[in-house]
Image (cartoon, rainbow, N blue to C red):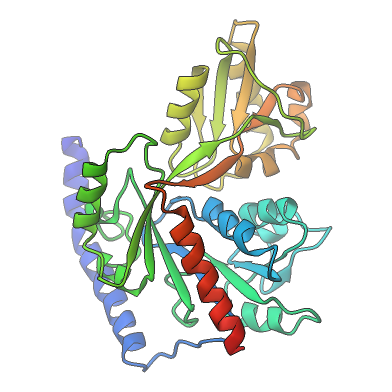
Length: 356
């Protein structure tokens, strides 16, 4: 860290103390029952984090959807970050990233047999879902760890391998939304985005530093990457190793994807926009300009699946219609612990279905 950044960090540290005091007091009000957390008869699974920025919540939510949707009516409820609508919105054939948010839209398009809805007020969202003619049998809350007015039955906390919560600081000095002690509310902790070759001693060191409770399972996951898919046609394509790639991302932390691409192809250039970036015609021009500067005959533009749902709506990119691909993601549990996670999650849902 540069001297300037260190000075800036120390100068705003008092703000972090004030912010932390406010969050600590709020949590104590919930812990004491002065502010009320509401439980529901329907199984509610929360996939969340303590830090600002991507920890892989959406891929992990999709993993749980695949695990449960063949047995139960599944609904996903999200805030719908950066959407232009208000209140409760149920996804349908007319939905767009603007009306429900990019990540809920991605889930809606991928999983036709589940219900997707958005509402900043998770209580109101759950109650609207349960009022549907065919109410869900399990609800997955995407990014609701701090939304304590709802008490999930199963709380899954994610922390990024590259930015573990024990190395971070409270906002605005760092990225923590609340003190790291908030992790005690989790039923399990997942260290996401790990290198696939992470060693056992390093995993043990991370577990030690997380200092999980005795009743909390700690899992390690890595990202598995599939065959690139054209964002316009949906067709998959294998690329030769000497293909030069322009990577375009609007996610919080593109490093793992950059590292993967560099091992498979030739990463020529990487354009990184802010997380949940709203792509514009100016961005289209920038992408085309960078692409035109790649002299290699074999070349392509790779994007994330989340960004693909917005980029495909830009008419200015029609000239690159056969050149832009997203790389599908899947979650892979390390240490052969996927079965344990699946069993614990499925058992929670089954037991609470019987209670219903």
